[in-house]
Image 1 (cartoon, rainbow, N blue to C red):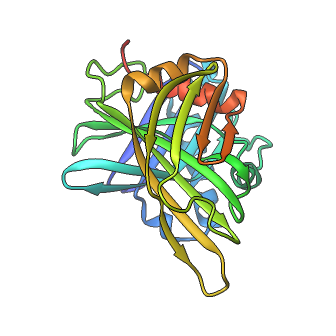
Image 2: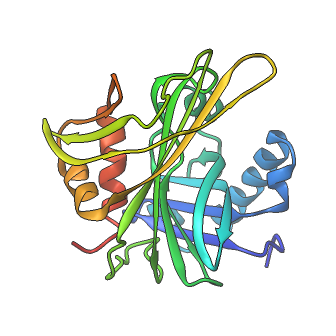
Image 3: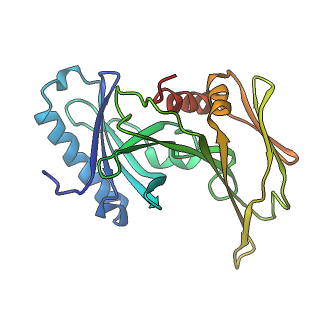
Length: 255
């Protein structure tokens, strides 16, 4: 009501982090500075209004874009998240540089009242290079009901969508390369798939693939200490933080 936004999600994680997420806000089309201004205002509002603010370690305010296709929630993308202490003072955290370098691997769970579904995702996992020249991954799935806070989804999804995106000076994945997911050295899922490829005027190749991975295989990846993904001749090992983000995703579903 305070900001007249159509869809706002508020959760408290581990009794210590309060997260306010503006979903499909008009500010998504505005500048970073305008979103930062709203985030600062929101943190101050939370600090003044939340009865248990003294118990908080931090306050997060984020902006997320959610696209829907055919009735079901299909894809979410976080634009920016801002962090504050319990008194609404900004905490030192360069979200823009961390997001660009792929170091910010955090799972998010966004509940939609209209659809009564929760979209669980990691916005970006940089597997190689950077966002201008490299390979990135964004895993996501949705479940019925509200599984955004302490609640857990009772129904398991059939699969988890792994969105791969590659930008390079030459095509990295021609044809239909073999794709193998390994958890602690053991193959948990294997398939072949063709990337969608386009070439820009400046000669850069963009390649995309939406790959459904069976949920049981995803659970084994989330439970592993080491996760590697082989695509054709290339092999990419997830960092400890990225594996931890998969584990956070799995924790939103009751085992």
